[in-house]
Image 1 (cartoon, each protein chain N blue to C red):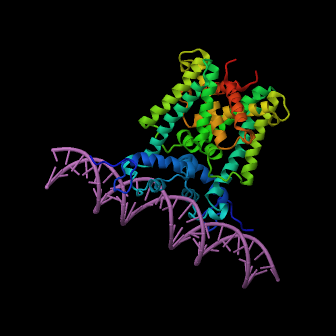
Image 2: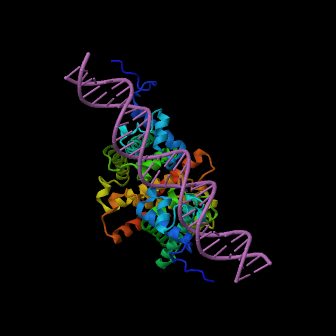
Image 3: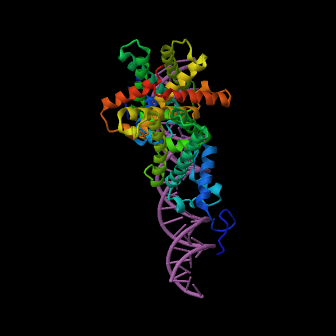
Length: 207
Length: 207
DNA sequence: GTGATTATCTTTACGACGTCAAGATTTATT
DNA sequence: AATAAATCTTGACGTCGTAAAGATAATCAC
């Protein structure tokens, strides 16, 4: 087996173009922003011709669907890590930690977050994307379940309302922060901002 | 003065192309969705050549900025009407009514809402757009001020947190509803949904 | 091993897009 | 009536996503 190393260059065949394109796509997304994203720039960044991506992802939708799916998988890791780092059994505190992770991911990956939650360019019926999104949603529902002591919040009206309220506040906060519309929260230290975010999310605690 | 009626056609000059283009742009936005919007389709719909819009709006950014500004002005009318229709002096009830208006506008104008709150295509430094957005924001701050009995919520940390929480929940709810991610709230009657939305927004009431 | 097959990547081409420049036509001004 | 200004069209340019066809490398059958 004379297979080249995945990232080795100079050959006609790339080795692992699929991964290289996903990396390039995310970098392009980060630098040019979501609305300035082009497939040709991704190909150029990966060092291949503009038509090469088609063989791995079919079209632009295929590439962005795969990227969004990876986004959700990483998203789940971030929120999970944040909850565990909180080191507490208190459901309210764990939910706030989850929300902090939610916002943290959005702020660290603005373009990717936008792609995942605000774009119709990925195919949201794509199996892997659908599954990754569902897993992230399940974590949220689980957190609410612990908070209100219900096995399946989605089975009761009050439960659905709590899930909706929780999701809405963390998602709305993320969206407004990364679109720079919450000017009155900017310009303070990271610690102060974290405290504010925690307090804001805390609004959803049961009375 | 033999000036033709604004909407009259058949002449070389349109009469009121600026308005016609704004109408066409919103229709295009509604039909094709935000990401499928093109300037050339707008021009075609308005019955002019592809380069005509430049004389009234400069470029695509100019047209979308003007449309977004009109969006904010209509947005403010919708929320204001909803608050007045509530017919109450209770600040909490008025805030919930405002939130219902917020969500109502988003659901009635999904593509326009996306353009206003989620896009970098409009020039958010455009004077009229900036002003319309500021007015809408001021209404929100005013509602929170009444709720917590503070003259200027933005001057205190607790006030800023309440403004952020309120905005986040109504905005997040709007965004998640119109991107069809809150599946568990769909499939019920409009009355039930309205009741859910009101209850969800009610979470932000002071304890 | 060696020829055939498959996978991968490039080249070329097409229509649609936003934008610009130049020309045509109408309206306004003097 | 002559001139200027405003408005709209035409044509062109570079970039985009996508498809087809050709080139090259890797894999497979034997």
